[in-house]
Image (tube, rainbow, N blue to C red):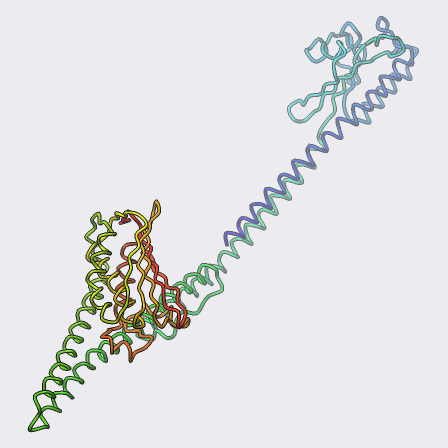
Length: 465
């Protein structure tokens, strides 16, 4: 609609510009033609023996010259005046001012040999002054002036005609615009009604329908955006259902294991003490696992809140990592895994120390749990002027390429059997990613099967709230 309106405006402006151009061009042609005819008359007067002291001969023996002057006046549909060097009017085709003197700024300039001048009189007439110049002598001799006053009636008539046509065209454009606007308004109204009906259907619970994308760009964009919201809602709903299913399964598994162990003890009347202790240790292990799952779930729920707060303070990251490695080293030593920390420089950043410790602890613990015996874990710390970087590299089994995008999802496990053996809940990397995102940072992984994995964390040195 706006495009159509702008096209009409540009057309009207363009037509008006063309009319102004042709009007100016017609007047310029009129000026050049009049100047040319006056120049011819000037040469004829000089050739007929015109003298600045006896211009009266034009009305006497040289009647032919008077005829030429009157013929030019008729040809130009205007008035011709001949003035001698004393500014006396010697001839006037209107016979009004013969014998009078005409001294004006324009006639003085022309008598002094300045350029040919012309001017408009009330927009209806064109006045042109041309010197009568005898060029036979070495120094040009101005004998008098020719003043031609011609009408611009024909030019004005043509301009008025063109402007009338423009106004008619403008009227047609206005009518077309009104009709077009009404049609567009009807189409928009129908589109609104159709969209309202579709929204009512969606509101009734039929989210699978979505909105039909209209032809109008604005409606298309609106429908497309709304459909994206619906699809996002569907994805969130599927994720929620999957999450509930996973939580139910994960919480049910330890309980099932404990029930089986307890039933086994109850079904045997004389249970050896050694077997009893073994089963009880297994039950304690399952209880610990259940507790860990619940703890991780609560941690994720707290982080998912939109109003989750960070307790930001200036923390020396070097010390934070050293504490974590001391805590995890005993676990690594049992399997002969070496843990090394390399710090390039002292790094102090604005972070939530508790949450960042949790995130880094999950990464380093995973690097130990899923490592090979007698392997190694290398933790490095570096920084630039804007970010600090933590890299955790292990020599474990690696992560398949098709799983690397999914490892940060809740309850996702690359090797489910090994995860349960190591006591993993499938929530550690999800918690780690959430913590890093809360700090406006990023985490990425590079891994090849059989070669180990490298996790790289990047977090701003100064917290951006």
